[in-house]
Length: 119
View 1 (cartoon, rainbow, N blue to C red):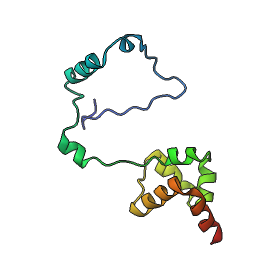
View 2 (view 1 turned 60 degrees about the vertical axis):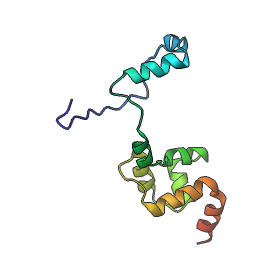
View 3 (view 1 turned 90 degrees about the horizontal axis):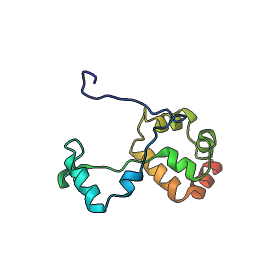
């Protein structure tokens, strides 16, 4: 563990961990719930924690929903490619204005495309 108490690692997408789900598939919902509660490091969120929680937007999910590459997404919606890449890599988080734009792209992509194309 690092000095900060947080260990970070990145999974290799070409070599995902192998999980045998056969034992878990045999458990009842009550057994799964009891097993989860028995892990002191994985306790359910408290109501106060849930109240503070915020939903995050996945730029990659929005982009993939529309079947676009990063470059196509950036060009279609008037964004810099480097910004889209940074959002997806989570090195930069979208600000409030960008979040609003991303929500509109999710819901009404053709409207945004028409407005950007008209500029």
